[in-house]
Image (cartoon, rainbow, N blue to C red; front, side, top):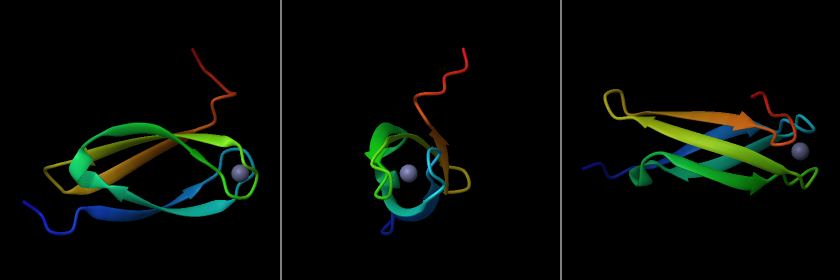
Length: 69
Ligand SMILES: [Zn+2]
């Protein structure tokens, strides 16, 4: 059990390059959600992964209008 599970991260908007500060509650495990850029108001797709071994939080960001399948 960890008392401090909220991690602060700086993400860079894939649309406009604006830096946004976010807080992620790592106690919820891996998350996959959308946030809105405060600068350009476009949706940013965020995927967070918690590495329990190192207690590190990885955040992947992509713009949903560019899909590579
Ligand atoms: Zn933006």
